[in-house]
Length: 615
Image 1 (cartoon, rainbow, N blue to C red):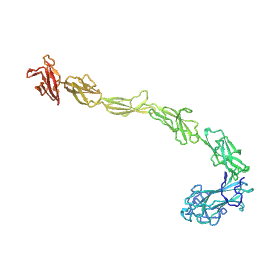
Image 2: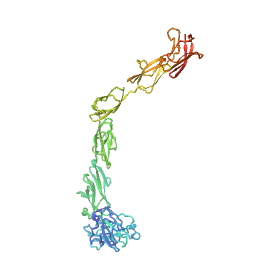
Image 3: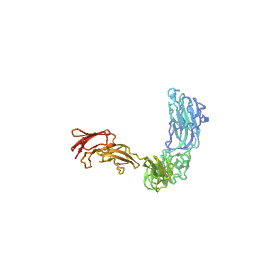
Image 4: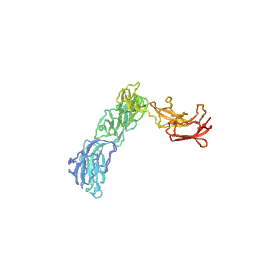
């Protein structure tokens, strides 16, 4: 056995148990509350209790550590805003802060006595010179007669600080003597009295001290996570003490479901344990003692580290419902979002093809049943079964638009009938038949709804055919050319019988024409047009054919003037109005065969050229 302090009454350094400690044999955290107190018993402290900020030689118990203006205002060691601590203003003389007797100990057994301390003086207040007098506390262990000092140690100087300091734990270890089962724990003022020696004490604990004992599984892991649906039949745990305190070891294994309440596992007293039903407990530890009789005595044993056996439950993907859509719509399958899992999508309840990884949604293209497989983020545990979600695509008609042109004054039947699909109809005119007849131009819509509730819309754009707008009609080198301002399905005729799509009539004889323009089979527009064709020659030989020079339809022009000259420029004949006829004579004399020249003005347009007189 290792003894931590071998000479009694000698000043020693504080220290902690080098291994594991047992359950707390004694602990004092001074409770909770928003008011000061209660006072400690006269056997516990030599200081005087006050229900306010303590002066030298006084103490109080409070959750408000800032009892005096020069103190730090900070929470107790646990951080609980209502947690109390012992607040002491040290006396000028050495004094007993705290003492408590402990009975029922095991002889020849090591123990640890510890407490949390903090210097309360706030140096930024400048209440004291410099950093003030430091706190210095002595820990002592006396025998039950309070006459023999078994062990002691000093904290050393704990200086004041300008900002709230952290609580520091100090400990003292010792070993009971043969036949010794009771001791007295003491903490005393070891510093000088005066300004600055002000402290708070919290969480005083006395425990048994033993070896550092760790628990490992067969893979030397100190914790293990397994999936619920693939957990091994059993696992073996081993306790490994380090022999820093005990020379021999006795064990008692314990299990717990919450790491708070522990139960002994019957018969499990060896260095190893085989856990056959890993569902019973989540946490395991082992009590260790140097003597068999002490292994279940919390006053004498130590406790190993805790081995956590985490049984990870699989989390099934929760469907947000089957999806029923109409043709042409986009459907999204979805499971409930859960940050604890990832979800993959398959096309079969087992095996099958992986369709999409790590997504809570999936957009299929074809109707079928799809399967969401969940895996926990922690532990990578896959659910026993995949979650099926049915994807249905209902039959539907398609949206469409039809453009219709009608002649003004006509009506048209709009047909929205769908073959092989049972639908109902609702027109924008409130009619409910598959067909309607309309006379007005505009936009007409009809909703077609299937028995499954799928709706499509057909739109009819009804407009009038466009009528031909004539810009000009002119004679060009013997052709009749009709020029329009617009385009369309127009037909043209110069005899009212024969129609053509071209607006040009080539090599038409001169004369007055009635031009017909049929606009998209709706109506025919009739326009009179004098086609100007100037003959190139005439033969005044009395045979009755082409004996005169004349311009066909000349009388239909609003303006008509013509003059004819011989080749020397001599005016032969002139006329200011139509009809005009020249027989090839000049002042009753027959002119010879030769070319003659003309100047013709028709409706403001001037023409000139030559004609040939042949005899």
